[in-house]
Image 1 (cartoon, rainbow, N blue to C red):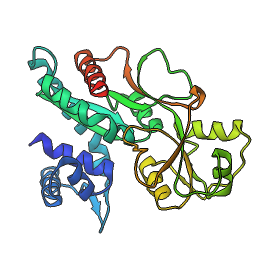
Image 2: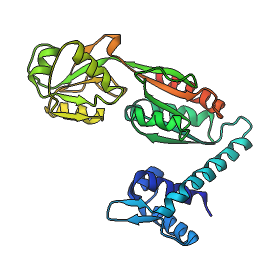
Image 3: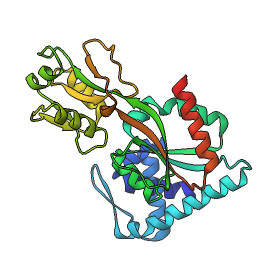
Image 4: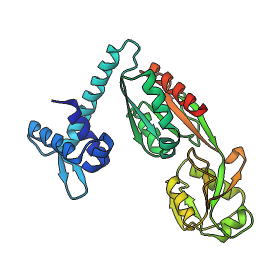
Length: 289
């Protein structure tokens, strides 16, 4: 059995649809569907309940997934053992959405040069969910917003970016930050997210009381809504945010208290220290270039 068939099954189970899994694996939906069909024939049971847009794991599939993940993990560990420098196999990296487009492209290019046999598996998610995955050893490292609490000593932290809080607006009424927030619809960066807490803290400190018109945990979507004149929003100045974009106005709140720190979090006693060192170096080089 081809181990990639198990990878496709896991991807479908995690993403909830064959189409999404196909995009994640750079395959066609037909190819992924064929892999699942071969697995179902091999095990003699249905593994997915399919509908028009969803694929839900059956009980048999749920029972199969832990063993499948273990087989894949062991396979890539063997690849790493063959490589003398330990720079091979699969490495699971979690990343918040703004880092996917703003930080990781250059990092991936750097890693490809020093570790061409490394398979970098990137999992997108929120800071909260990715840290939970890291704690449960489902991923090897994570690029997230710094948590609002002290992390256990079993984790190492490296600050990648310090992002000041910015009020984004487009042709908004009001002369200053307070007036723009109070006189226009407010688009709230989800206050339950670790980055969104900074905006919430600013509003609280300034005693600005507003009712959000929208609440999102998607900074790129917030930017688009602001540009369309749907409201104003307090957000971190994430990597990739172009403050010189036509029509976009930005008031920067240059106070450390409200800055979002984007960090790399890794286990202190990682089984893949060479790869983590290479990742740190690649992140640093891509930030400097």
